[in-house]
Image 1 (cartoon, helix red, strand yellow):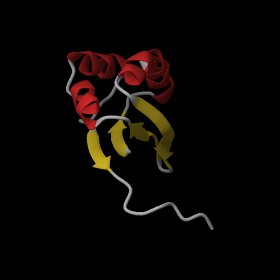
Image 2: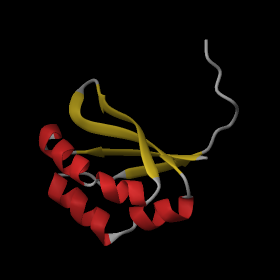
Image 3: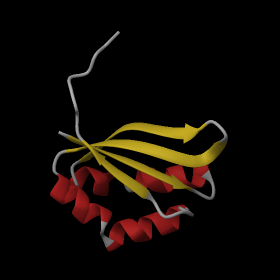
Image 4: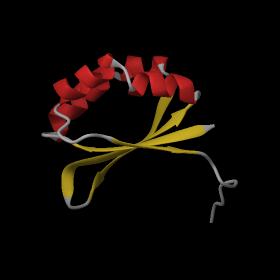
Length: 95
């Protein structure tokens, strides 16, 4: 199991969210499942999204696709997205 953390700034959260939701089938086809959608406490347009990824190869293809670039531009993404690929270091500890 892999995780992908994405961070970027958007022009307007509400507009971005509508476009993001419309693009959900493409993310699902790429094997990505959203776990968390977060905004920073000091800027509601600074977003962090955590995805679970079934297959890093498929996730890479999606990340580098023209479709994603166009969807992000249409949605009002203003900054170059930061992508961080993660894997569990140990089993989750629940307190």
